[in-house]
Image 1 (tube, rainbow, N blue to C red):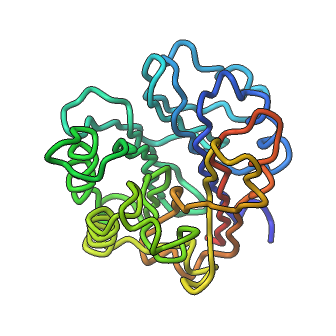
Image 2: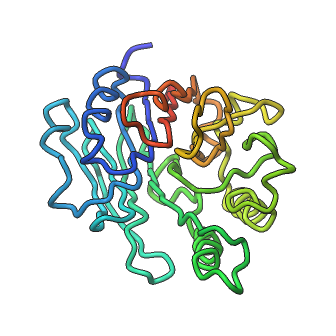
Image 3: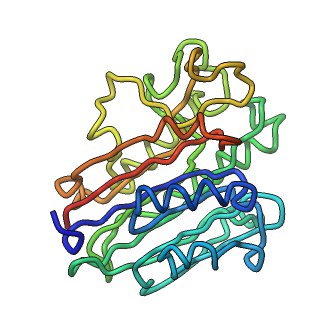
Length: 271
């Protein structure tokens, strides 16, 4: 397949883009996606290392940064037709950026999300962070696949929910742990299906198989214990289901020097 009729997107919670700039540069050099969506960049827009990535061919950057917290960025080889940002829950947090690119005659809208983690206690009555997370997920219902002026849509990022039983190392033990509680998983799946999104990762890896994108820093040996969760997602409009050519989770990235606790997820499409 020639580059002209393929499109590759990656999503990665980088957990500080300035601290891990070298890892991003290595990933871009080795894997060369057309678009890379980063979350938890943890820097203001004018502090983002855009010039370093431009030297690698990623001259188009859509930023929504915040000092020391949150932040999302979309890097692209392809010019953006549009860029938009939304403030969910009216908190002033930088958790979303939307871009549109034209690929082989297809106008593709890309939503890059960083959903709140939700704290430790899964009770919105006593934990404001968890209440914020549930409100955020509820407001995400407005982000639909409705075409409008575009032909297809993607929603990617760190959604901080592992919705399926095999998206966590132990469904039974994590039912009361934030990211896998029934209220979170039910809300996310209801929002996803109601808005017309397809879980593209699970088209390639069936729900009967374990699939993780995050491993805690607390684990003494993350690989040996393998107590992971699938917190990072790639969703698409149904028009992209047949175009999905490949999907991979770069598990080895968790073992890189000074890694993020998340790893990149890469999807390739034949458009």
